[in-house]
Image (cartoon, rainbow, N blue to C red; front, side, top):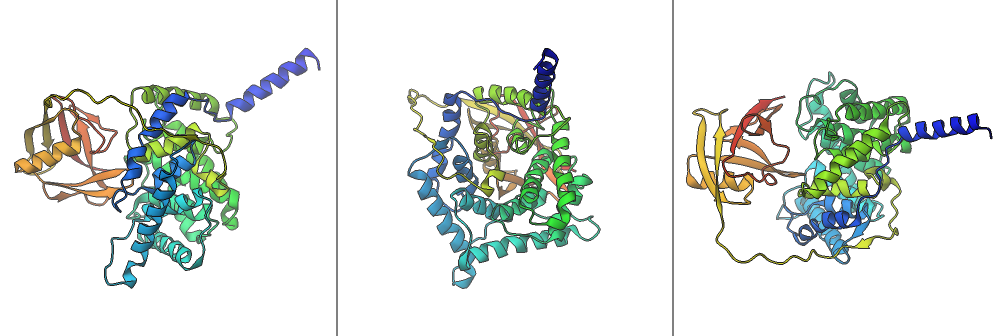
Length: 428
């Protein structure tokens, strides 16, 4: 081969690499440290604390938690099956949400378990019923909104897909329309997460060919989702923000994208994530469980054919020396709620290191303040302040004064002394 031929071959190889999202290896001690943050969660086995995403994240990672893993999966099975069958008994239990049910199905497939029999059929039927209800809420004219949100809608389609369970074309069609037309996606607090999850669902459907009549639209929508995620990259390198980047990278690593300079975008994101890892930014178990597969070059789509015999490194509990006993230092946080009448404003004193949820709880304990939450896949979600509920297409935004929206939820954000936190009711 002449020099010209070699040069053309090199340029072709470089061009191909530019179309592929590759995440170079991250220092194993950082990955271990990240996995160690999930270990305490594996010991929390009450129904409200069980989180199937933790199990999925570990199974798709390079790490394993030894005997804790099968015990955690057993606890998931017992609680989820009991809650699904509870209407047959005299003591009904709270039902898992659509998203929780979908993650539970992913957890089963992560253990190479195929859904079948009476219990499996009941599980699939329940998730399909959820999707049908959401589809009806969206409506024939697409002007409605799924009560569970498009994130859980896409997650549920993905969970059924990895088990090779077909959903009706009309159900898939609602998600296709939403992504292609930016319907209810722009301006919401989870737009990149929604697009990434929808893209993962489309990628699975594209590979499985379960909805063959929609194949062309599914292929187009998968690419559209990736393009929109790429356009959401910030100058710092994140896709949306630091916490939506792991799921975005799961999507972008699933297939090449000719002409999109995917390689450089992913390298930029990797550098940003590495800096955040070193700063200890990742504490939320859902986000950690989405990041660990990325660091092992995996995505949720790999659950179509999971490798349950792949070697993984045993996680060891972190060895830390307890700090000397000392009286807790207290900080003062100004809590404001300008969206209610009369507007609320009060200084709250809490121990240093307390979460924003602790601040809200203390304010309520002091009197003159009320708030409400509901459980979500990523932790408690603020739904009401001073009795005022967020309506349809509204949410309570957490803002650090003067005007910085928080990227973390109330259980994860740690206020600093002297900060002012505003709770704003925002329409999207």
